[in-house]
Image (tube, rainbow, N blue to C red):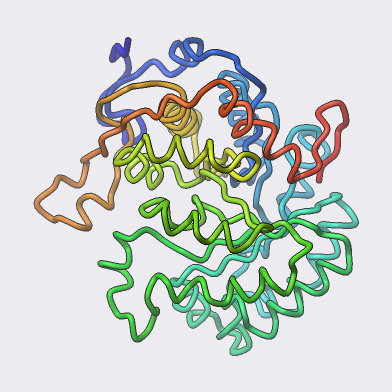
Length: 357
């Protein structure tokens, strides 16, 4: 039973839930591997690990710049694994997405043992690159740009065998933020360069972040997986997944059951110096509570997390509105696969070691 107990009006806890107490109500089917977070600083990592422990999350794969990763590695390398990414905090520095990024690919591998690299290619990358003072960054975010192709080859030659990518954003964004199809292309257009990359690097496992970018249409996503056996997806971007997967929980359950080993658990939690202890705890806990509720229970009620996309689509809806959450009640066997087995296989993870890859 959900009993409101905490301060109201918190965007990550509009239902005033006691997340600490509620964490104990979930069955411990298996340890949980979170393959998609953004833990950026030691102080945030300490709080993040506290929350992760409450919800049974034993290891995470995170995305942060090389400088932060180096700071985290000595104390947290035993449970936080580092995905190679450019340092987006240095977006105004020349070479961050070109020459320096190529050097970072080597350092993540050699210093931190990374085996996963992320190629972020969301449509808004066009805007991001154009704001850079370095003209060479203009096409750097495109998945099929020359610098991206060079980075893929370098990563492959260095031994990276898992490539993560983000190419699709919510349908709600294509109705609003990306309404100019002449500039951003259609949603389907975003996947054309990905298909080419999947075929070129057919012996690499590709993780499609955020349910492959298309949780709204699991039929389309199934066809994409059928065409590309080296493609898997993660469940990150909690607000997005809760909003869309709750519209068809039975279909989500069937999708997970039809694709053993190809649906990995992820949250997209952001934990950095901007989070103080009170905000951070509810933020981190809400994502674990919401996704575990979606996957494990038959809950049918409001999400505790404010979802700005609801107002974006319909201005008459409050800016503080939350999505409706409906649980999919995955079986224990499917939960073990999503929570642990799929990621352990894809990422060659052995819990008995302290591997940081």
